[in-house]
Each structure stands twice: as C-alpha cells, then as structure tokens.
Image 1 (cartoon, helix red, strand yellow):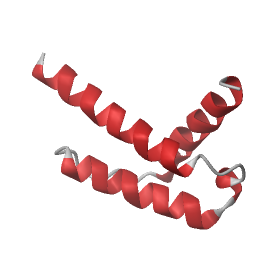
Image 2 (cartoon, rainbow, N blue to C red; image 1 turned 90 degrees about the horizontal axis):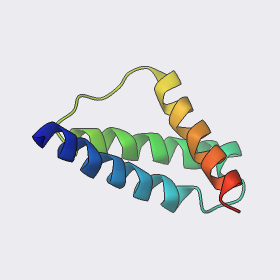
Image 3 (cartoon, rainbow, N blue to C red; image 1 turned 135 degrees about the vertical axis):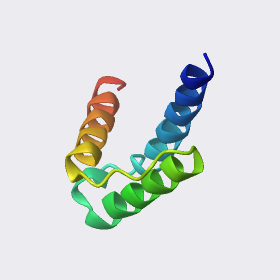
Image 4 (cartoon, rainbow, N blue to C red; image 1 turned 120 degrees about the horizontal axis):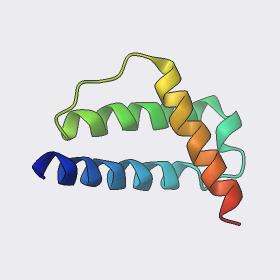
Length: 74
C-alpha cells in the first residue's frame, strides 16, 4: 500500500507541474517550456526517491498525454 500511495502523490505532483506549464496555448511547440517541464519532472522524480529517466521518449509520452488531456477537457 505504501508504494501505491507514494505513486499517487508523485502523480499528483506531476499533474500539477504539467498543468502549470501547459496553461500556455503553444506550450507543446516551445522548446523553453518543454525543457523547463523536463527539468521539473527530473526534480520531482528525485524528490520522491526515483532515479531520473534518461530516455526522452518517456518525457515525450508525458507531453503527449498532457496535450491530449488538454484537448479533451475543453
């Protein structure tokens, strides 16, 4: 159960970070925002006891999910 709650806390922190950056309409086309978001995700992983992810496709998937969520929430 501890691992599950730890992951839920991390997921909420990731969502808050993504929401704060994805508020800009062109966020997914701006390298500065994507770089800041990636750095923030790395820091969040570290804060929650997870090693940083070296594969860029993982971050790309997070960005894609954020954009899909934003499109469907209108």
